[in-house]
Length: 233
Image (cartoon, one colour):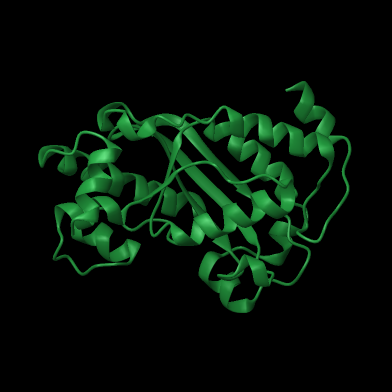
């Protein structure tokens, strides 16, 4: 896009390790205006979602933890859309803690010359369009995207993020599994590329696919039905 090319040609670094200027802010606000607010009543079989995952240096963006990578895939209902994936490392100018390097496989060298955070986020939101977001235990992802939207772009984060637990707790309320690994094993999904943002997003998408079909079988036709059923647990 012309506006995005203009943005990329005019960089100023900020404390988040990204780039920020009035054009970027205007562009992201334009993208946010396109978000569909009617997804609660769309049939689950027709609902377009972006299943995503982030790898970070820690759990607290307000204390300085940063996004290191983002991975995502698109789905319609329970079907993954072939070829519609997103992945990017994010520039990080400090030393990644050793335990995070060991967990994610992301090294200081890899992120040194990666795209700045603002560029990655704009491309991610452009990829996501107005789709509903899905994440496994989504509070982590939500806190970082809210913080980045506020601090980096001075605009609220408007996408709806649906937690996978809303679905599997409705279908199997007595299931005491929490981790992505344990739920994948429970559902016969191979554990592949764990703690890689795209790998985790793909496994989460397979979980979403399974449980979207299961919640429809018990009478949940829309997200609104899912929320109402979850509230009664």
